[in-house]
Amino acid sequence: MKWFKGSIQVESSGKGLYLITDQISQVLNSLAAQEGMCYLFIPHTSASLVINESYDPSARLDLENFLEHLVPEGESWHRHTMEGRDDSPSHMRAILTHTSLSIPVDKGVLSLGTWQGVYLFEHRVRARSRNVLIRYLEVD
Amino acid sequence: MKWFKGSIQVESSGKGLYLITDQISQVLNSLAAQEGMCYLFIPHTSASLVINESYDPSARLDLENFLEHLVPEGESWHRHTMEGRDDSPSHMRAILTHTSLSIPVDKGVLSLGTWQGVYLFEHRVRARSRNVLIRYLEVD
Amino acid sequence: MKWFKGSIQVESSGKGLYLITDQISQVLNSLAAQEGMCYLFIPHTSASLVINESYDPSARLDLENFLEHLVPEGESWHRHTMEGRDDSPSHMRAILTHTSLSIPVDKGVLSLGTWQGVYLFEHRVRARSRNVLIRYLEVD
Image (cartoon, helix red, strand yellow):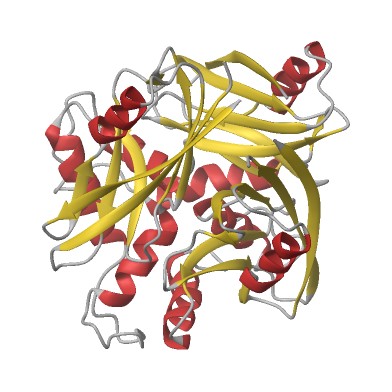
């Protein structure tokens, strides 16, 4: 068993899904990973992780619009609004999606399905620099 | 530490929750698992994983109806509709539930609570054959 | 590699977010943990886990109110109501949040972001005693 500790940086330009599959794969390549588990963890409260369809751009657009509809901004009962209308909704959208993901690695690659990609989901309006922690347990 | 790599196949007959606890347990039994972590990963973008109440069938029915109400089909702003009205909503329902789960194993069995079961949640209308990846890290 | 198996007890006084970061940290301290992965699993179907903002109490309040608005109680189509109006909604709120979380540990502490805390989310009205399973894989 071997253990690797790393991270990637994602420069978000505001709300939306940012595909990070390639950045994660590059980390695994640099380690000459063979087989094991890849753990992703996002240390932010207004951005999150999701795995979903990465082939058709319209699917990504619908997912982005979906969270806007599901978690409206500017509700009268919102109290946590010091940083703007998108402040509290960004936390709500984060808890509905994912802070941690565990993905099997086979023959050095993430065991994603044909249509799957790993995304960082930015929930704030302003551009931000985001961090994703990567841990890799090699079992070979 | 030992490592096991497997998968199970689930034949879905369309939308709904499919209990897969027994199939996973059978895999663990066949390995003579003792203690460790069981990782589940679903390599699909329109089906997902959830752990919830598996005793009363009415709880399952309510969860199924819940996602229908929470994520309506046929919204005017949906763009990703080439495969039908259930296409985009199936991705939305998938990101609100789970792609990966990590379950402790004790004395060879999943450490589920009394009322918990592991489900594959099929979000497409048509019957499909689905795959769930199982990784098991034995620590004994 | 070393493996640790433990749990914490959380006395909930009804619906709401209960910060459990310190209880988990105490377990890691007692183990003299250095580096590895911490796995959390909640064996309940009407309580769940989330990681989110733990600095401003108004953020917590908004998240609590959010699930009340997103998953209304007393819908005409609810069938699983034997234990009350909050029964079925508690399962719905649980599947939208998390049953399992995997958090990297560095230098003995959870690799949480500055504003992140780990919460148990109680979805039932009545006070309950809840259990969270902790597994820790030390890789040093």
